[in-house]
Every structure is written in C-alpha cells, then in structure tokens.
Amino acid sequence: MGVELEPTKTYDLDAAPGYPALVDPFGRDISYLRVSVTDRCDFRCVYCMSEHMAFLPKADLLTLEELDRLCSAFVARGVRKLRLSGGEPLVRRGIMTLFSTQSRHLATGRLDELTLTTNGSQLARYAGALAANGVRRINVSLDTLDADKFRAITRWGELPHVLAGIDAAQAAGLKVKINTVALKGVNEDEFPRLIEWAHGSGMDLTLIEVMPLGEIGRLDQYLPLSIVRARLNERFSLQDTDDRTGGPARYVCVGETGGRLGFITPLTHNFCESCNRVRVTCTGTLYMCLGQEDAADLRKPLRASEGNELLFAAIDEAISRKPKGHDFIIDRRHQRPALGRHMSVTGG
Ligand code: SAM
Ligand code: SF4
Image (cartoon, rainbow, N blue to C red; front, side, top):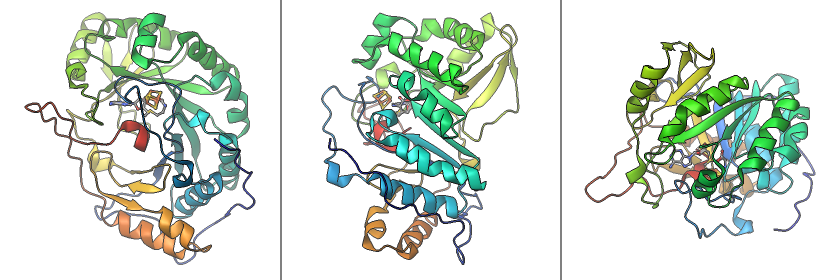
C-alpha cells in the first residue's frame, strides 16, 4: 500500500442549506452511519473471512479525503453517530487522519459520537491518539480468553496483543465494550468466564449470534442465543433492562457481577422497527440494510463533481429505498448463507 497524503481540504459542511435531515419512508431518522474504511484485516476469523481473501485494488477504495467528505455529508444531513469499522479499521494507513478530521464535528456539536469497532490488535499503538481525537467508547471483538483457541478462531491473531490493547485503551480513558460471537462447540463453554472477566474490568459484554454472511459455510456453528441465555440463567441472575445504546443489542444486568450483558440476535429477533442506521463500504457503496442486497453507489457522484449536490441526490434516492426490515433466511437444505457478501464488506 502506498502512503496516502494528508487531506488537503476538509468539507466543513456545518449544515446543508435546503437539504433536510435524512428520514426513511417508514419515518425512521437516519442518525447512525457505519463506515467500513478498509476491506483488509490482520486476522482471518473463521466466520468472517476465508484464509485466502482477494482484496480490492487500491484505486477502488475511497481516499481518506473522500471518506472525510462522505462522512461529513452524512453529518450535515443529520447523522449524529459515526462508527468506523472494516475489515480492521486500524490497519488502514493514515486512519488517524480521518479520526482527526471527523473530530471537528464533535467540536461543533453536530456529531454526538465518533467511535470504532476493532479487533484490538493495534490498540496498544493507537489508544492514546483515539482518545485525543474525541473517541470515548470503543467496541473490541474478542471471542475467547484461551490463546490457542484465539489462534484457531482468528487464524492469525495473538491474544496477548489484544489484551495489551484493551489495557492501553482503558489506560487512555476509553470505555471498552467486548463483542463476542457465539460459536457452537467452540466458545460456548467460556461465556461465564468471559462475562466475569469483562465485568470485573468494568466492560460490558455483548454476545452476537453468528450470521449467515459470506460463502464461508459456518452454519454448523450457529448457536441460538435463546439457548445461551437459558443456560446463563441457571448460573447468574439476569435482570432485563430497558437500556439501549442506539444499537440492536438487548441488555440484561447480571446480579452477581453488577455488569451489563447484551444479546444481538439478528436471526431470531427483529430489531428493524427502530433501525436508524446505514452502512457505507470502503468503495463508497451504501447499504440501507445489513440483511439485504440492495445498495447504492456513492463513489460515482462523489467523484463526479466538487460540489455535494449529486452526492446528496444519490443519498436521498437510496434512503427512499431503505426497506422496512431484513430478510435473513438460512437455506438449511442447501447449507447456503442468505447473503453472499462478507461481514468485512459492511463492517458488521
Ligand atoms: N475487524 C473489526 C472487528 O473484528 O471488530 C471490525 C470489523 S468486524 C467485521 C465487526 C464485527 O462483526 C466483529 O465483532 C465480528 O466479530 C463480527 N462478525 C464478523 N463476521 C460475523 C458473522 N458471520 N456473524 C456475526 N458477527 C460477525
Ligand atoms: Fe478481521 Fe474483524 Fe473479520 Fe475478524 S471479524 S476477520 S478481525 S474484520
């Protein structure tokens, strides 16, 4: 990868006069944008990527300057929460520049939250810079505390690096939430230990049901969280809460630890009615729903002119097509995932 230049200009769209805040046809405000800033990663988690991935040529990717302009356009149209994801966001060269330029929207009050989802491998290096750029909370993905199992799940990952990254993040004052994908026969015996560890260190933990994305054939590891919850109920006292963090997780409070435990169950529950989010890939493709194929190309209007009229028109047109709900169907007979794209394309 070549060195990317610092952005030469930032599009400080304090507002977009004449353009209203984004609202979809079902009256949902679009206030949350997730951006996959790279399709690359230094891990190869078995449920997310195949071992030999073909990555995109660099010319297809939006530059950091284009990403800044795109994010700013969404902020100007009412997005108040921005999450950078990937691939692994912290392996994109120069990514701190994007955090730095986007932090201006925190300063003006147009953005409430700038955050990221990371595998934690590079956190020890970047935690201080993230905090300095106004990041307050981060999500770190971690499925096991067993170093061998960690290597088996991530293929290329080293647990001690991630644990050191989490320590560095907390030392820098970042609030950390742990995301754990529930995998049948792999980490299902470890959830009590993970919960006690996370809560003991002041971190929430969210369990995620594995989703049928990408041609990776991981349906054999599908573990319904209803089963996990029932098992955890025998060991812990779980009290329902109304807490929502603007995402699809439902939270319970664990009596024994005093910590929060979230469940993200995209396959068994429907969280679509309150869906306030859209996703952009690193090539500028806008997905209006994680569970559907419909998408809009924003790179073309972005590159077609310096002004934002074409970009806003493309965003408006796409939001007018945001579906009411998702459509995950596991085709068990053919053992095929419902969607062909990998999670690393849309950033989860
Ligand atoms: N590399 C970063 C990370 O791992 O946190 C960010 C990108 S990753 C695609 C975002 C989240 O998606 C991670 O928490 C990961 O565990 C989750 N994920 C990936 N593939 C998944 C799948 N098939 N089902 C459920 N969650 C998945
Ligand atoms: Fe990389 Fe995250 Fe996918 Fe794992 S889940 S391969 S860390 S993008």
